[in-house]
Structures are given as structure tokens and as C-alpha cells.
Amino acid sequence: MLHPTLVELQARLHRTLPMGRIEVVKLPGLPRLELGLINADFPTGPLPGEIMHAVIAEPAYWAFCWGSGLAVAQWLDARPEAVSGKAVADLGAGSGVVAIAAKRAGASRVIACDNDADALYASRVNAALNGVDIEFCADVSDLPSDLDVLFMADVLYDRSNFALIERAKPLAERLVIADSRVTSVEDPAFRTTHRADALTYPNLGEFDEFRHVQFFEFNRATQNI
Ligand SMILES: C[S@@+](CC[C@H](N)C(=O)[O-])C[C@H]1O[C@@H](n2cnc3c(N)ncnc32)[C@H](O)[C@@H]1O
Image (cartoon, rainbow, N blue to C red; front, side):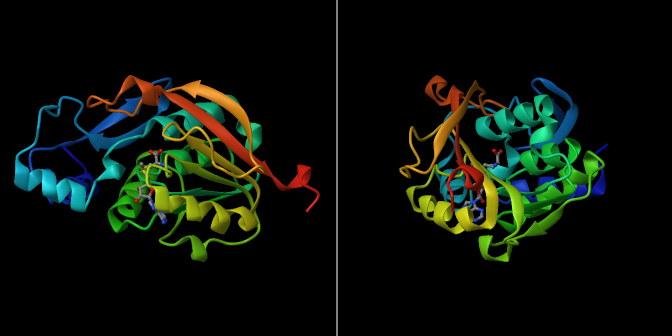
């Protein structure tokens, strides 16, 4: 029996994928972190045209834990000192996986930011599932400018989202972009600091080439600015 908030999350999924279900699952390598995500046995074949159009118009990205979000959550689980006692934001939060992992790792303040209202609702539901308190906002301009660490995980799938990098850079001491879709963030101030293998969960047929996640990092302390 699903909690009423998960029933509401499923109703939001049904707006585009009426045959999908929300299941509460543990993530690979993170047995203490649970998320409400689309059912792993969702059929991977072609979708009927009408549904395909709805999915393209309003993709429920929040119903998946993307490979880069998973890689960041695993990285934080192994290195809580990266955020412990710090103010953190998760820009393009989706399910809220990075925000939740950061709070679990001991961050003093965590803000999940997403311009999709359903993603913010999913982040809220998932934070409650994991017993953590996080804050929410819908636009990068609503984030505070005194953050210690700002994460962007799998947000650069859309070329226009590169503009978010310049918006995010002045807000934090450390900006960590984790991405499996791009090989460069096209800004010489960033260095590749970590590589990991992780696929989107549940995996509904994601190409293997997207399993390689890179962490591109801008660190104000090493920039002399
Ligand atoms: C592919 S999902 C990744 C979600 C999550 N970070 C993860 O790794 O599972 C990208 C998310 O970025 C959000 N997004 C895209 N453009 C955005 C913007 N300009 N501001 C805030 N969020 C944005 C989308 O709504 C979506 O939830």
C-alpha cells in the first residue's frame, strides 16, 4: 500500500505514462537511500504515438535516478566530509537524489532546485521517505549566493542548459558538475576531478556509452578570484 504522497506522485506520472507505477526502491550501492521511482519492469518497447508525444512534451525525468545523480550520491556516501556542515544546492534535482545524499552526509543546509514542479514534489516526497529536511526552489535565481557546494548532475542533456553553468558559478565556493552526456563543460576554469561508472536507475534500455560519468569541478579557492 503506497503512502498518499506516493499515490499523488504516481498520479503525476500517469499524466504522461498511464501504465507506469511508482515503486519505492533502494539504489545500487546505497542500501540506506530509498526513492520512489518508475517501476523497473516498465516495458522498454516503443510507446504508442500519443503517449510518446506526451512524454516528449513533459518528460518525467524525476521518475528516474540518473546515472550522474547516482554517481554523486555514491561519492558523497564515501566522502561525507565534502559537504558535512556545509550549505549545499542540487540544481536540476529531479528525484532529489543528490540533495538527499548531501543531507545524509551531514550538510547543514540543502536546497533542491528544479524548474519542473513535479520534480520538486518528487524531491519533497523522497526527502520525507529518507527522513531528511531539505529546502526547495524552482529557479536558479532563487538560490542563495553563499553556498559552499553546488551540484549539477545530468543537467547538460539539453544544450541550452550550458547557460546554467555561468548562473551557478558565482553562487558557490565549489561547483561540481557530474555528467555522462558531455565530455567537456567548455570552460577552462573546470577540471575533471573524478570518474565513475553508473547507469540510470531503473535502466529502461539506456545506452552503455552513458555509463561513464565525469565530475567537472570549479573551485573558487584555487582560482584566485
Ligand atoms: C536528467 S534530470 C537529472 C535529475 C537528477 N539530478 C539525477 O541525477 O537524477 C535533469 C533535471 O534538471 C531539471 N532542469 C532542467 N533545466 C533546469 C533549469 N533551467 N533549472 C532547474 N532545473 C532544471 C529537469 O527538470 C530535470 O529534473
